[in-house]
Amino acid sequence: MAKAVKAPIVRPRRIAVLGAGSWGTTFAKILADGGSDVVLWARRPELAREINEVKRNSDYLEGINLPRNLRATSRLGEAMSGAEQVFVSIPSQTLRSNLEAMIPFLGPETVVVSLMKGVEKGTGLRMSEVVAQGLPIELERIAVASGPNLALEIAREQPTAAVVSSASLETAQAVAVAATNRYFRSFVNTDVIGTEFGGVLKNLIAVAIGIVDGVGYGENTKASIITRGLVEMTDFAVAYGAQPETLSGLAGLGDLIATCESPLSRNNTAGRLLGQGYGFHDVVKQMNQTAEGLASVAPILHLAEARGVDMPIVRQVSQVLAGTLDPKDIAPHLTTDSDEPQGERTTDDGQGRGRTSVWGSLKRAFDQLRDGGRRP
Ligand SMILES: NC(=O)c1ccc[n+]([C@@H]2O[C@H](COP(=O)([O-])OP(=O)(O)OC[C@H]3O[C@@H](n4cnc5c(N)ncnc54)[C@H](O)[C@@H]3O)[C@@H](O)[C@H]2O)c1
Ligand SMILES: O=P(O)(O)OC[C@H](O)CO
Image (cartoon, rainbow, N blue to C red; front, side, top):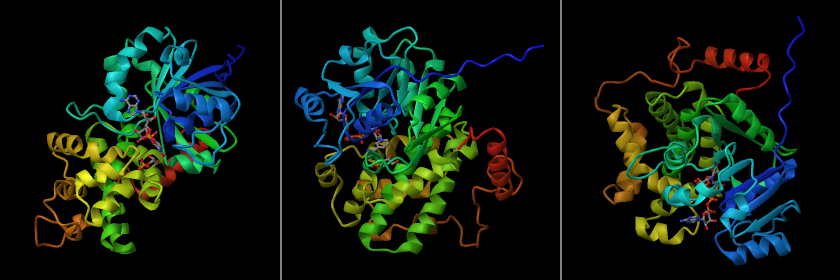
């Protein structure tokens, strides 16, 4: 019998990106450099004009030239009409209020992709869940993209990878094809929960790292927090149904490293200001870009409590934010309920189930190679 030939996935012709901040503009450039025609929605007409006339977004991406096949508009309908894929990159807390305006321009086949890394205050919902509630769209047409993706580095075309995730592998693949070019590679998975929570949770650990940096502690403290932070992230995400291996991939460990190490990170910067002694309100005033971690702390702790997940690092970040813990006393990896020495519980249970093991990681790496690199 003749083998069925799979139709190749074609790059979309028209794409919309909503939100012309640093990530929205950078992602629009990634997609345009991949070969699609991209229309970027900017709220301010003067920003749309700057992008169209001089191919620059000087407020958010100083010194970056934008491609010719990327244009901007301040009219949502103009950006969305005819777009096969719509990427959304606005602050997470503003998503719900923007969805209603999108409904009239949503086609029957449009795919909506969240680029955001927060949870909604009040509901604790992930961004793809807010999209599913606010738009008349099937889950299979929703995707998310996440990974170690500091906007300015990618806008400078430094080689980077990300993960695109959707309940539908086909949708994830179609989005990944669009979001791949000579300097940016998108892998795929179907673990939307793990991919989204990875992006949310690493922000909170990056705030903790910023705090200890601001206080003046060194590399041992930071390495301890990053390592214990990954355990917290994995425990939390797995309790909500994520695959543990997603948290050791690009959307978990990868993004944790990038965000904790880089002064470009707004979460890390916000933490550093807290560590230097600024109060929460001063920090918010000084940040003129989105630091999602600050709004996610409370809902994440709430969700953690609901599933009995212990998150000492995130708890201490929330205490510093509330002004009830002196930043120099932050040592979440040292807190313990008991004076007895405890075994180090890593993300590895040594059995290759649930939590990941070294052997499990190696086996997965071989599996990925065998599967053609589908999983990051
Ligand atoms: N910057 C990065 O390196 C990066 C990388 C990956 C993911 N992200 C995520 O992308 C999302 C957006 O971040 P960003 O870095 O582009 O933020 P940003 O602060 O640079 O830009 C936010 C954009 O949203 C717009 N905006 C603000 N309030 C709005 C509202 N009420 N309605 C509609 N639009 C509004 C702003 O005008 C701006 O264009 C965040 O969830 C962030 O975590 C950022
Ligand atoms: O600047 P941050 O802290 O929002 O981090 C940006 C990206 O999420 C890094 O992957």
